[in-house]
Every structure is written in C-alpha cells, then in structure tokens.
Image (cartoon, rainbow, N blue to C red; front, side):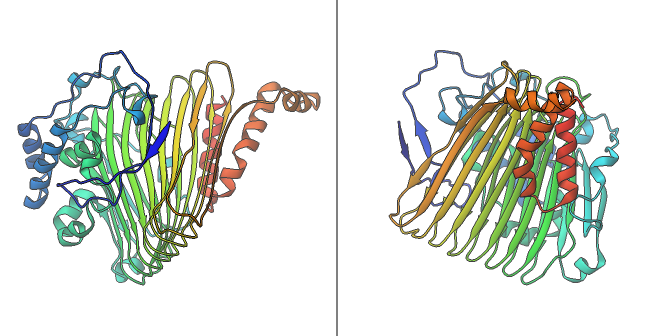
Length: 470
C-alpha cells in the first residue's frame, strides 16, 4: 500500500496546490459500473431560464456541463468509492431537469417547526429558509445589516452580489474535483451565500435551513469570513421521509476564513431516509485564522461526503468535530482530509459514530503536511460503536508527511457494547434498553462536549434517542 499526493490542473477553476492524497491498492472488482448519468445541454439551459439566471452564471452552468461530461462515473474500482456502491440508484430515471418547485408540483411542503428553532443561542442574527428553490423566510438583524453582512440564498447572490460572489466562487471546491461537483454547478437550484466583511464581529449567529422537496436538488453553499472578522453560521439540510422514489441531493460547500478571522460552522444533515446524498466540501483558512467545523449526519439512505480543511496560512487552526449515527440500511461514507500547507498550523479532528441494524459507516481520513510546513501539529481520531452483528464500520486513517519537524498522530477504533457495563446498569434496576441508551450517550459525550452550543447538543441527543428507539 502506498500513498501519493500529486499536482492537479482544472481549466474550469483555479486549481488547488495538490490533489487529495490517495491510498492505492491492487484490488480488482469484476462488477459492472453504474449506469450512465447524462444531462443534456437543453436541460441545463431550460433550468437556467426557469431560474432567471444572470448571464455570467448561465455561462458557468454550460462550462460545468462540459467538465461533467468529461468525468467518468465513480466505480468500485476507484479507491475513494470502493466501499460505497452507487449502482442501485436508477441514474437513467433521475429527474435532473426539474427545479425543486416544479418537482414538488408547486406545493411547498411545511418545514418542521423544530428545524427553525435557534440552535446557537436564544437570539439569531438572521434566518434563511429555502424550500426546494423557493425562499420562504429571509431575515437579517438590523445590526448586521449596518455592518454590511450579506446573508442570502445562492441564486439571489448570483444576481445581486455578482461581483463579490465571482471573487470567491470555485476558489475552494473546483468543479473538476469530481463528477458530482460539476453537476452541482451545472444544475444549482438553491443554496446559501454568507459574507462577513473585514473586521466585522457578527455576534449573533446566522441560521439557514434547506428543506429539500421533489426528486432532485442541487445546492451551493458559500461562506466568506473576511480578514479579522468572526461569525457563527448554522446550516441544516433536511427533507421529509415521505418523498417517494430515490430523491437525489448533490451539493458543494465552500468556506473561506480570512487572516486572523474566526468562523464556527455548524452543519447538520437530516435528509429523508431514501435520499441519495453526494457532497464536496472544503474550508480554507488563511494566516492566524481559525475554523471550528461541527458536522452531524443522521439522515439519508446513502451519503458520500468529501470534507477537507486547508490550512493555507502560517498559524492557522482547524478543528473538525463529526457526529453520525446509521441505522436501518443507511450507508454513511465520510472522506476527510486535513491539509497543512503552511508552517505552525494546527488541525484537530474527532469523528464519532454509532451503527445499528444493518447500518454501515465508512470513514477515511488523511493528514497531509506539505514540504516546508514545519511545526505542523495534526491530530485525527475516529471512534465507532457497533450495536449489533448486522452493523459495520470501516475506519481508515492515514498520514502523508513531507516535512521533518512535525507532530502528527492518528487512530481509529471499532468496538461493541461492553456486556459488563450493561450488566452493571441492569443490576441497578435499569432496563436493558435504557442501559444501552446510557452507554451510547456516554460514548458520544466527548464529541458533544466539543460543541459550544446547548441547542445543537440537545438536537443531537434527541437524534440518539430516536435512533435507539426512545
């Protein structure tokens, strides 16, 4: 087994300095590839007209389509995909040409009240709710308006904040990174744009909710916290469980944290149980900046997520805290990377997950330290709790170190419920179900303590109870 980091070139967008580190194997898969996923130029143009695109973004859609057409479908022979089989999805039947509103027959479904409650404090700086491709709520606190903070949906940003959006769009996630990244740009019908100007301290959190309706949704989230600024952003993507068929969500998340800036980004995924979810996400942090990225995944039928944090400036810090719980036949695949591209950088990743029934999780992580990135300090850990025989967790940590004065550690564990712990609790008069629930709560407590917001902790605790049958 070997690892390698290679340069990459993407003509459609500025290229990153490196390509995702890849673990190569000699594994051969003698199975047919997934059915072809095709999108016509006419469908992209029709979507562009239906959404009233600005001319510049209409051109970007067609450029992305060319990149999409040139990319092969992922297969089980691709290392990043070899544990995630996407062949059962009926790609030939996907309704990719419809906007969210049309796919929902024009009936905006009601967003559950629980998703709209403040999670990062009692008062919010703004709330944005997007149902399909329709904005149903858009508010921003007067104090943040005076500070020139921008908090709007992605399509509105392409028209009203074009110059600013063009400056940052595609600078973190390039469309050439994968077929689904290109698809998200070509068919985007929703998303969020946040811009916090230089030096602005946005004390009140911003809360956005994307309520996915219909059979296909393509989202783009762009968050920029400029030099010396700070902000807290909570973004949730969710959908009803009642949507028939195989709903599809494809999205990108691009986050830029400027010099001496600080962003706390809470990202919650609670999609319906039959949704197929594919996302490319990256956070870039400049010199002396700090990003605290909190991530949870409890929904979808299948998720394939690429999440990277790039420490591009000296003294930058990135913290990634991940929570996931798969039950039923859920398959959650998270591919993370911590890239130390400058000296004196610090990254800290902890992902914890639980599996029950036939749930399957995949976590593949890599710490990369670039040549010359001395004094880098990287840590990654993945802990998994398997609750019954049918569940499975695959955990693959990795290091790619190209500097000689660093401190990087990693580890992964997969364990089961300790019978003696359950026995001890039951001997105190606690039922087996409650005993198991207590042990699972204790397992997740270290990750919950990394979350600074009581509302988010309570939301995740409720999801644990629901998954445990409480």
